[in-house]
Length: 145
Image 1 (cartoon, helix red, strand yellow):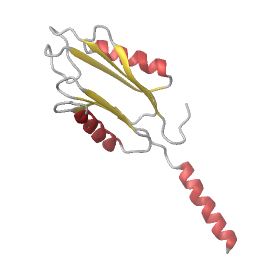
Image 2: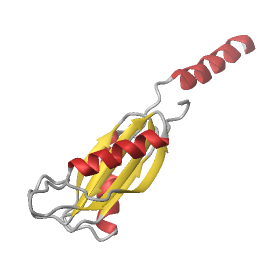
Image 3: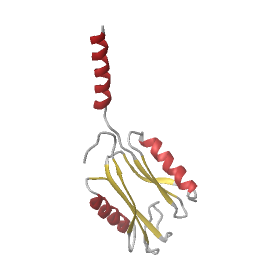
Image 4: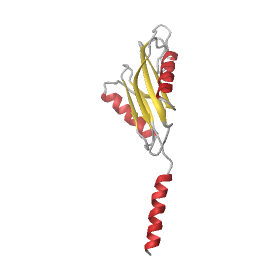
């Protein structure tokens, strides 16, 4: 009897260790340029996206919405910059109406790689001098880089 309980206990622990790990990151942006990030390992992406919107609203964002999200574990970054307002397409898809641009990167194998990708994405949205403003490692439990 004790042997069976011990085996059942070991199987329960093993199933927890072998459960698929999740990662989730999201960036929300308000129409006034305020933005926020949210990242939690082992949380559903929909929950993290909702929290990013709530965080953006708390930071002063008006009508925030998720502009980028990912369930890929790894390094992440957000770059922010002034934008060319005459022909730039901002992160919300509006053309010629913004004085800022944001670029995001998720799931990179290194922090430097995530930073470079976020800066490149910011330039694609019209950023003139992108600077990395936020970085993190979204490593789900048990994830190793």
